[in-house]
Length: 228
Image (cartoon, rainbow, N blue to C red; front, side, top):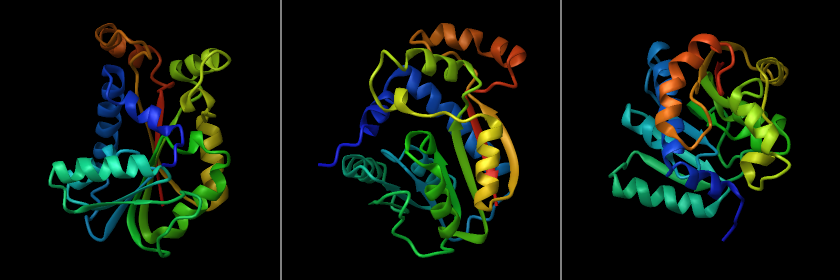
């Protein structure tokens, strides 16, 4: 068994705050894809898929999906969940995002959510995502925003907490924009998601969500970028 630390993050998705984060992120992803009117032809790749949460959501809206993750434990978990849900148009494989086991120009859609912040060097991974994306395809990135309440929480807790989340390096809007441009992507659109607070009291966090979005709308917890 190859333990990566990301297994702990995936278990967080089973908790109330994690489920809310996943719900909001999926809403942002599917809304973006719907608004761009993408043809659901070919295959979609979920790079760094974990237990396949986003992979299965893509399958729900009509994509033939492939999920890849470095953790064999998470790949097995994702495969088990897909079988339970009869998601026969979804497949999972183990692989490194910086050296993907797929041919070039293969995927019509590639998504990569909350992965680049937690690997040592995002540049090789982005080059690989560009390599496997078809020339007319779309890459959708989701990254944690350092200039947000979530980013502040992570920095304050970093010296005292263990786990992959607190070891990650979040991006500012400017940093991720410069990085993807340097690799050769064209930025199509940037959206913001996650305006609730990173606290275990979900009902209170939801109560404050609209207020935070109104007054701190320029500082979302997650930046969602669509790239070609």
